[in-house]
Image 1 (cartoon, rainbow, N blue to C red):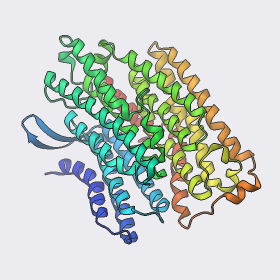
Image 2 (spheres, one colour):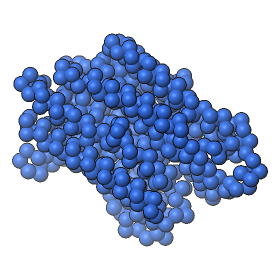
Image 3 (cartoon, helix red, strand yellow):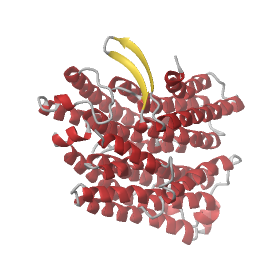
Image 4 (cartoon, rainbow, N blue to C red):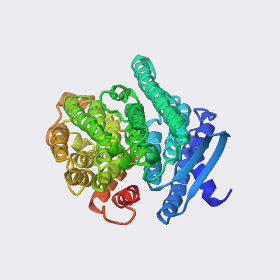
Length: 497
C-alpha cells in the first residue's frame, strides 16, 4: 500500500483507535486520557493538512476494501470531502480541549471520550466515503456513537431525549437505506462523481429517480434538521455543552447537510437534478426551514434551545445554496458548511461557559454577563454578529453569495427569504448582546452565580480561537486556502463538464 492509499485510513483511524484505547482506561487515569485525546487530535490535523495540500495539487487518494461482489468500502478524497474533513479535524481538537476542561470533575469520562472519538471517526469516514454503501455505513455509525453522548448525563430528561433522538435518526437511516437500495438496484453500485453519476438513466427512469431522490432527502433531512424532521434537535440540548457543540457544528446536523450536497452534486449531478425538477421543491423546503427555525428561536428563553432553533435555520442555508442552480449559489451554500460550523461552535462553547462559570442557562439571566466573562462574551458576540451577517464576518460572505446566486438563478424570492432570516437573526441575537453588555444583574442574581472553575483557560481558549477564525474567514476570504477559495474550487469542478 503506497502513501496515496494509506493516508486516508490513517486519518480515519487516528481518532478511532484513540477512542478504543480510552474505553479501557480507568476513571483515575486523567493524565493518560488527556494525552491520548490531544495526541490523536493533533495527529489527525497533521494528516489532514497533508491531504489538503495533496488534493489542492490534484493528487488522487483512494483506499478500498472488497466485502463481497458489488459491495466495497471505498475511501476517497476530493475537494468537497477534504473541505468537510478539515473542518472536522480542526474543530475536534478545539472541542477536545474544551471537553477536557468542561468534564474535569465529571464521572464516566472514559466512556464519554471513547464515544466522542468514535463519533469523530464516523464523521471522517462519512466525509471520505467514495460510494453510497460506505456513506451509509458511517452515517449509521454516527447515529450509534452519538446516542451515548446525548444521554451522557443520565436521568429521565436525558434518556427521554436519547429515545427521541434514536427514533428520528434510525427511522431516517431506514429510509435512506431503502432509497440507496432502490437506486443501486436500478443503476448498480454508485460512486460519488464530480458532475454526477446518473446522466445515462435520467431519460428512461425519470419518475423512479424522482421518487428515490425524495427518499434520500427524507433520510438525510432528519440529521440535517429540515422541517418537519427537526424535532429531535431541541430535545438533544440536554447533552453536555461539548456534545451540543459537536452535534451542531460538525457531526450530526452537518453530516445531514453534507449528504444532501453529495446527493445533488455527485450522485444525481446538478443538471440531472434540475431536469428532473428536483431543485425548486428542495429550495422551497429549505426556505420554509430557514424562516421557521428563526421564528422559533425568537421565543426561546433557554439559551441552548435558542441556539438549537438557530441551527435548524442556519443549516438549511447549505441546502438552499445546493438547490439554487448556478455556481455562485453553490459557493454560498458550500462555504456556509464551514462558516456555520465555526460560528455555531463559538456560540455553544460560550453557552457552556455561562452555564459552568456562572450557572446561567437562560437569556433572561444574562444581564451584565459581559463584565463577568468578557472574553467569552466577546466571542459569543462575534459568533452572533456573524450569524446575522454583519460584514466583514464569515456569515456575511455566505449570505452575500447566496443572495447573488438567487438573483443570477432567476430566483429573486430567495433574497426575500434571506433578508427575513437576517432580520429574525438580529431579533433573537441582539437582545442577548444588549443584556450581556449594557444591563446590570440584580444583587440576588450576582449572589447566585457560580465561581469559575480551576481549568477555566481550557474553556475560554476554544471560543476565542473560533471567534478569531470567524473574523479571518470573512475579512480575509480572498486569501489562498481560505474556506471561500476552496468553495469556489468545488463549485468550479461541479459545474465543469
